[in-house]
Amino acid sequence: MNSVEIIGNLVKKPIYKEYESEDKTVRVAKYTIAAQRNGKKEEADFISCTAFGNDAVYASKYMDKGDLIAVEGNLHSSSYMDKDGNARYGLCVYVNHNQNYTSRKNKELIQTAEANERKINDAIDSLNSSCNDNIPEYEFGDAMEGVPFE
Image (cartoon, rainbow, N blue to C red; front, side, top):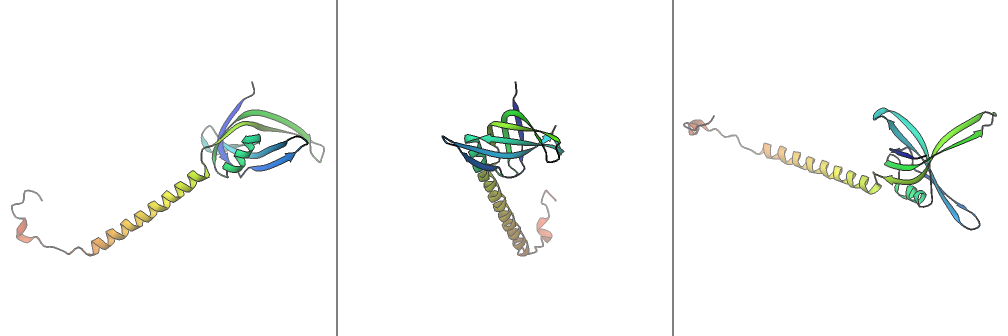
């Protein structure tokens, strides 16, 4: 069985292309995912992915650099000769399904919420400082005698 599931961050926006043939249009998106090794932030594997058809369209429309995405597919190996005549080998995931866990809309909502939170905190700080400036000093003197607390 050749099956791969990967969760990672998109290294850059997918490259989308359409290829015309006599009877159909082939849609292809290529992108790379940085997947952490065993949960270690310092170590990552960079996985090349190729999506076709509707998955390619989805990738081009809804996936962007830095997004956390999940990919299901199968591993495809290839080989070629470089310009110096050396054999080169590569692995790529042919995507059967991809999903974005950090959509642009969610990012925009998070950024808006963070900006609003900063504005609210600034307003609260401003009110607190102006309120503290206007509180008069009061001497209780003998009025506090007999009060059961200190």
